[in-house]
Length: 433
Image (tube, rainbow, N blue to C red; front, side, top):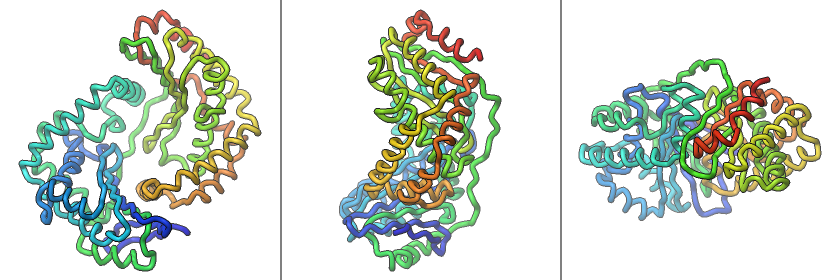
C-alpha cells in the first residue's frame, strides 16, 4: 500500500502509512527550522524552546504532569533540534490515537514558557553543551568541518546553539521564536502504524482545525562556497591510536535527485561500507592493518563530503594510508567490477526491506521525505530506481569524485608520533598531481 499524502485544512502536510499487523503508532512532527535559519545572535533559541515544550502547557502546567499524562497514554516521546530542523516523535498504543493527538496538540500549541522553567533549563542546556564539547571526537570533527567550510559558516552550527546566546536568552526571545516559526503551515506530520486509512484525515482535521497561523514558507539561506582545495590536519590528542578521516567534496542533498542519492549509497557500500567492500577487504582481511574501517557520506543542503573513517595504531598509519591511496587510485582508473556491483545491489535491495520493518523508522523515513520535498518512496520504489543504475554510472561518479587535488586528510592522535610516522609525506605525494 502506498502512503496517504494530503494537506489538512490548516495546511499541515501529512503522510500516513497504515500497517494493520502492528498494535502501535508512530507519530512524528517536523519543521524546517533549526540553527541555520536563526540569526547569529539567536542561535540556540529554538533548542531552548524545544526544552520548554516538556516543562508545561495550559492543560498540564508542569513537566511532571506532562510525564504522568504520557504514562497514562502508554506514550514514549522526545524531540530534537538540529542545524536544519526541529522534530518531535511519539510512540503510542493503537487504541490511544485520538487522546494522544490531543495531548501532542496541547504540547505544541500552548506552551507556558514560564520564567522558573527557563532559569532551570538554562543550566541544563549549558551542561549539555559542555558534555558535548568535552568529547575529543566532537572537537575533532568540528574542526575538520571548520577548516573545510570556513569559520562562522552556518553549516557548523550545532543544534544546542552558542553558550553566550543561552546565557542571555530571555523569555521574550523564546516567545518571539515561537511566534515566528510555529505556524501550522510550516509543519510536516508523519504517521505510521495501526490507523484507519478511511478516518485518519477527518480525525486530524477535527483535532487540528484551531491550530493556524500565517502562511509564510521557511527558506534556509543558500550560501556560496570557496574553491575546494586539499587539506592536511592533525588534531593533537595524546593516544597511541590514530583516528583517520579522509574525504572528497561532493554536492549537497538538495542538489541531487533521488536517483543520484541512491547511486551514492551504492558507492558507499562498494568502497568501504560492507564486509566484502574493496577497501575494507584490503585493510582488514588481506593485511590485518585495522580493526574497523568504514565509508560515509555527510550531506548539508548544498555541499557534502564522501569519505572514509578508520582507527589505526600509529605504527601502521603510513602503511594504511599508502594502501588506501593505492586502492583509491586503482578504483579511479578501473572502477568496480560487475560481479561485485551485482552482489552489492542485491544486498542493498534486501537491507532496504529490512530497514522498513520498524514503524518508527518508517515514520522517520517519510518525515525526511516531507521535510526535504522529496517523493514518498517505499522500498520497492527505491529498489526499482536502484536497478536502473548501471555500473558505468557508479564508476563515472567515483572517478569524478576522487579528485586528489581536493582531498582532505585529518588525523587525531599524538601529534609528534604522527609527524615521525611520515603521514604528511604520503599525503603530499598523493595530492601533488
